[in-house]
Image 1: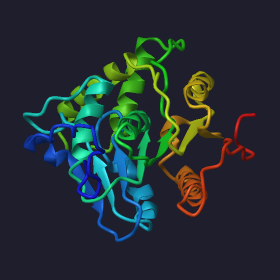
Image 2: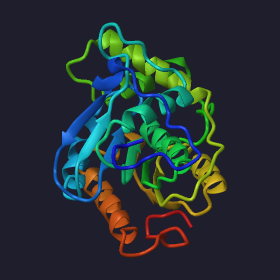
Image 3: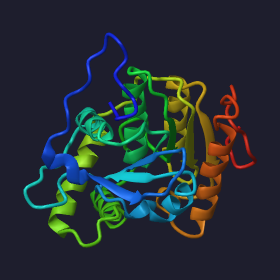
Image 4: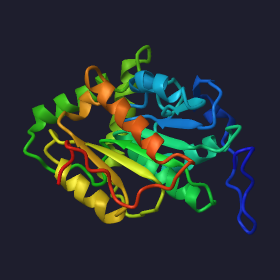
Length: 268
């Protein structure tokens, strides 16, 4: 558990994170404030995509990020969502206060959702933001081998891993893509949560439908852009606004609304 969050009576605290994993937990902002945010890496493992959004989140409190193992020599990448979730739960226990917000783009949002479920079992209830995160394994969408290779390169390029060895980044990306092909979201919970879905993606409707099945109270907003646009200009401004609106509406001053937000951009 975090230092400010002892284990509930009758429960057993999880084992501490190995010392070798300590370098995966990265302080992004040490701002003072009541809301501690943790951002989870997308496929590929880096934290670079979050730097613009983190500037806004730092207005609420400290921001930390969890990068993936596999980006440095001697590290082995994880290739399962349950394995990553267990490892990162132990890292969260190193923080000085409880997490108030778990946020992630793509694979990172899926990890945020699964971590929130594990924390719920311990009596902790962070808010969750998922930015175009999958609920189902990738479907066959007509891409041939060349298109799939191009998509893999796009994932590598957007992973926020500048300065890391390109072969290690590629190996980590491949491990994460394998993890996604084997994972379906099955467990729901009632944390206050937001999903931002990219309507331009061919499988957006299928993922959105499955998310709504496992999490009926999930807030869902659809934006008219592609997956790789959410955290880059000019779409970053819209994404930041959606996240800060969610934090405002679900803050300590009032309960989370019972029904999803339905702005003009959302699917009916």
